[in-house]
Image (tube, rainbow, N blue to C red; front, side, top):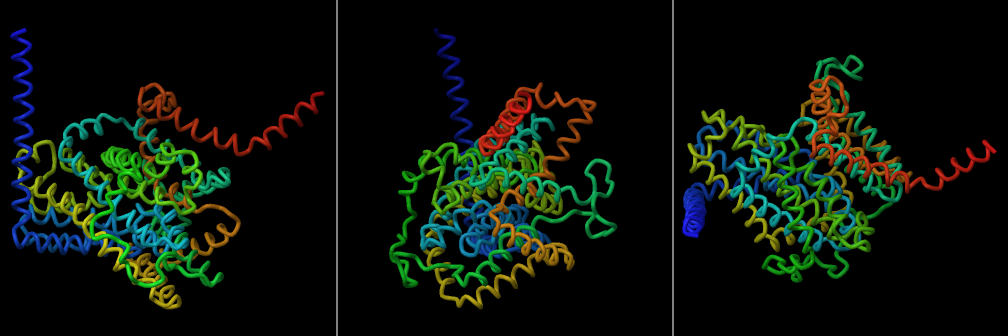
Length: 533
């Protein structure tokens, strides 16, 4: 009894010591952040991140790239904090243009367009923006807290995943696409397959042989998803608005003026009761997805949206895609927590968790630092200043609810002709600015025209974009796993985690297809039976 009591006391003392050390480090990080110069830079980074995320084609990635040379004159702790704040703020900012114009400011906002823009068209614009603000902020806060508490543990979990398991995760994500555009699952799967095919254009990731480039050197790097996203969502919607004569930004049904007096200065904490499962579950799920190297916030948003449909009542699930707040809260909570999760492999292993954290890794190297297992111990102040910046950025987004809603509701006062012109102008600039080549602009225009007609025939374009985004992530893992196993496909089923995920993915893919085509299957079976008779 005495030995077990002493053991418990020793464990308790050790836990208290860890907690006290953690609190001390966080306090030190906030003290560095709250210095006048750092606070001024923090506020500028927060505004720039939201602004860059809301402009189609600009993205937080581009803002971080442009600012890296300027951060060379800053202290490393301040420089990394500024870049981190821009990243998390831009992930939230992308939801604003998605809701207002059906134009994802960033690829991680694609899923937000499905219900956010529909809420706008249904006269519930302020509710849609408030939901996005709240879910984004809370998801980011939960993701950052998990980042602070469990970085080393999560990093070990991510490293332990083989290529087979990583492919299985992406495969299940692709299988979940069958639930998007549930009116016709077959069409959704067809569009996803087209997206996967487009993702194969360029250099083979294993052999570096060209594929479907037709001799064009500009296609060696593949067809970028930004021009496709801008074309399929923005350009197609502009064409649709011109044809229908509708309004891209609709006045609230309960508020015909630009006043937002119905929006409280306090954050809408009642949303915790409104989304009791979606926000906490998707925040944890998004963080885990973000920890996977290369997955990023876009994959988090996809999993968040589709997984939310599994945890809500059936009567709510059937309304996803028609303009419900659950469809906004789900991807926004997941993609913002995934942005925080993407810092886990960067800080603890030196492996970028997303495209933007890959650029932030370059900033570390520029300042003579190399992220890895010893970074938290050797650069404690830098790491916890970053943590403090990420936490305060998400709290700031939460507290800015009324100001954000008030500012963006003013957009509906812009005449429709000017608004559509501005949107087309920004999409052209955004498509060109990625690689500075006109081919991307032409790809965007062609994608927009094709998507315009596809939507006319009820073909959903979202699965196409998801296939294009996830395909290039899945293929290298698939190829490496097969090379290591000598071409043996059983490698995906013999490992416990990958086996479970692959079986789940196959069921998620085949069962909805069978149910969607059961009448045709019955006809084929009955025809075969009659022919045998």
